[in-house]
Image (cartoon, rainbow, N blue to C red; front, side, top):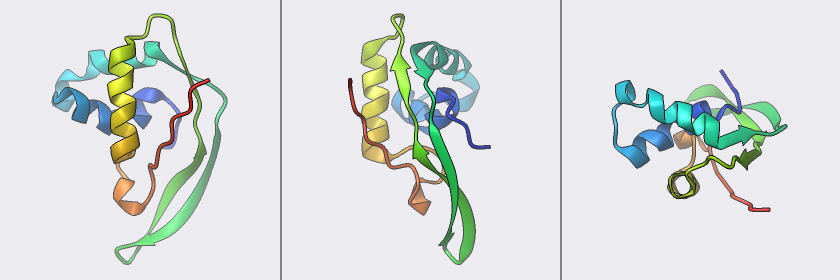
Length: 103
């Protein structure tokens, strides 16, 4: 499923930043949904060949607003991880590149 829900988009990054196993991350993902508000995004799908298989990935621009209740230090760590490591489970396939712009 392709979505701009921050808990889905940053799923892997949250695990990497917190070091917690999936079972203990529910509260963290709920908080993330309160901290990052999804704005209208442009999403499209493309297919690429990776390791001899055709895989479908999402491309486009995802936009979020930082809410007033956000833990800015935690969001900063999350975005630093996303910029350096990419997002999503398909980063090995060339998807998941991240650029952060602050307005």
